[in-house]
Image (tube, rainbow, N blue to C red; front, side, top):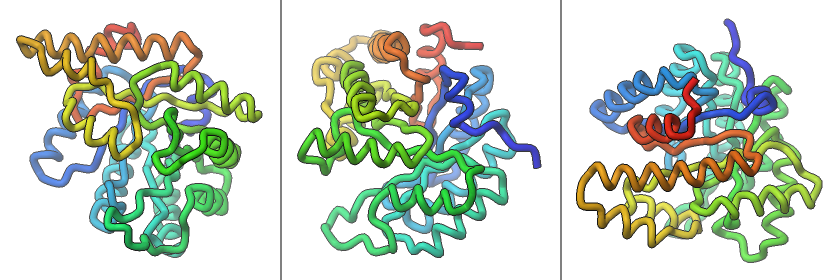
Length: 290
């Protein structure tokens, strides 16, 4: 089986361009995603990632696994699997990592996952992403491992210094990080500087979320502890035509993306919500289409 280059290698040659998909729950959603994948083909993406689902339960885990394996086999780019450790046994995770390796999926985003919303114990053998990174490493160095970074601090953090030290320790074990979405480039640039002050200079890829759906992003921002751009949302919602609304969304994402690239970001990771139109417009406006 021929293997794609690892994401850690792609980042070394960057800048990269990547998008995030989520596993559809319905046949209609799957058809939409398949259309989106085809429409994004001309971009010559560096890689894609596939989320694990909010709960990381068996159903969403299976959809993620199948989608990642199919994309990695059928496309010109590697597919990175999101993998959460909360709520899963070591044996379950071991088996899934081995299965990915057997199918040539060698890029994994190692995440702790979210505890149950009702406050009940998540169960499982692991609590922290660091533990999952170490487990993946036990399968050999051929895996390229990413971790999550939060420019505005992890939602369960209460101290900035401690948050950055925890992230630095986690990133030292991994190969790169991908950030939660944010809406101020300065938050990302400050994060990178703070990590450098701690001696960590591994690539941190900024995640960019176009504000196409302000209400949906507002809900996600509350869960993620991210600041929400009220002024931008008001402008988007107040647009008089669909064309004006789209222009506002794209212009804001392009402005921040350009600031990130100018600031030295090793690439852009676009949260596309399984739709292609906005991504294509952003890439064209930035002049990144190959």
